[in-house]
Length: 154
Image 1: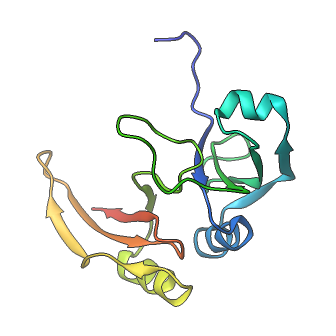
Image 2: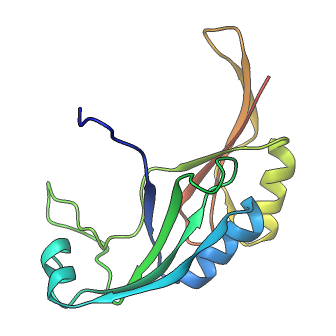
């Protein structure tokens, strides 16, 4: 493991970075970290492996970790790849596994996500954990279909 490693950000490739950033700001209280980014050129092409790469976007400070906490990097490529050859991962393909947010009330947070253009994936459930705790959670999606887990522990 690299010494002095520190988690910095999660990157989310968007179809409309401005709308998606606004969703995370309004629903979860993420805060923009200026400046907005707008990258292009040979170094970006070489680093991404994407010919003609151009991307723009913003970093959003995730809630609950202060001014030095990790960010959600919401970027949009001028051209995205919906599919990559078998066994490869195109860096400009939209999506990831899921983001998780701890919330006071999962049903209320779910309702807010749905009211702002997100979607429902499953139902709100409460499960016991092996440690004897209980977690109430559900999956929803942001307006672009990326999965979000909402959770509350008791």
